[in-house]
Length: 223
Image 1: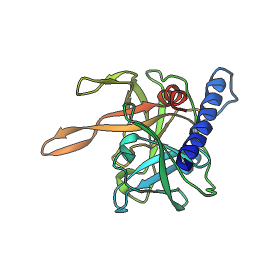
Image 2 (image 1 turned 30 degrees about the vertical axis):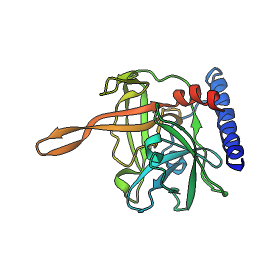
Image 3 (image 1 turned 45 degrees about the horizontal axis):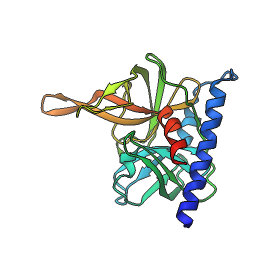
Image 4 (image 1 turned 120 degrees about the vertical axis):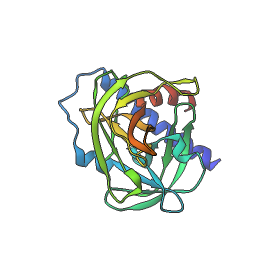
């Protein structure tokens, strides 16, 4: 019962943030811009139990991190690490396997900025910046690019609402935030389709992201 109550609290908190994002999207906002340091501090590394393999996520509310479903799908206990080096365990609170999204929660007073979400739909050609923890290294990276296409079919024939990106995403960035030029999180890094170059795989193949608008649409139905 306590777990269900906590889940309802987390979902309610994020639903309130999303509602604010929807309203804000309809009101002209003060000029804002993407700030690399703030974005990096909102981003966390998510470590697997072996402390060797990891992914990324982004703090979207106090105690709540948005990431990709495939990051938490194994059910392993994950540990989050902030830009400043703080480490703490996280608990999976909500998942959407279809859209590859998940929310994990943590306890404690973590002094990191909360990223702002945007529920506005993405547009082809929109400028983006992806932040993540690539290749399981002790570093944060930022890459810049554009939305290449807003609808991309899955290779197995199932069409998921993901966007194709003209943007470098490196393994380890999965679940990390993708920002627009206003500094709002508009998508989550989802996958890299590696291209074959000789006898090795290229890391510059097709890249995909899940729009935050999918979270905005899904969460009210489960909250």
